[in-house]
Image (tube, rainbow, N blue to C red; front, side, top):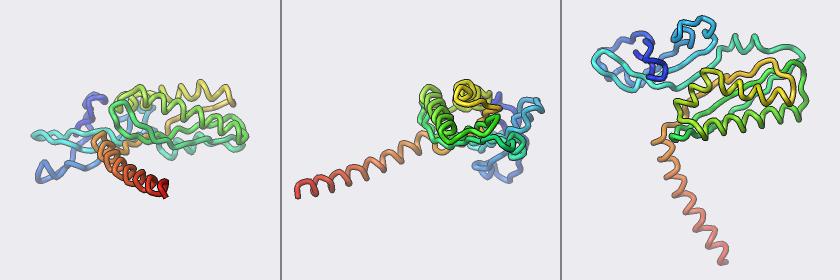
Length: 201
């Protein structure tokens, strides 16, 4: 099993099957440390899904990036705030992605400061998605660029100890997004027609 090209087609391991088609759809989990031979990155889990098989090689797509629970737990401090958020965005090539950043403050922040930090997270993640393809957005998360951008702005609101993207999940492919939009357009047209009738009454 090979990782996608953006992960340099690194080997993810092996899986057994009587027929090649049987492995399509299977998922495999590894750590970023295993892929990059950098044990310092073992707190990042990556999940891939097999999408294609050629002779004895299975090709995968990236579907999830997630920090380990132990690592996240190690960042929590008593008397400090943990500010997190889940936001769904769309990339320039129409992938729908759920991104979950988290910030750890040095001391206890008040509600308005937490709100301001969350707003910065939303703005930065939305802007990143609006300028990047799915692959580029994944790279930005994996390489820590988005968490660095959030840290740089949010620390002006309140002193921060650390910012991470605790999870990024592929929610829908472009064709799935397009099909959903087509379905919702039909529903919208129906509701508009109903509104017209009530307006006439």
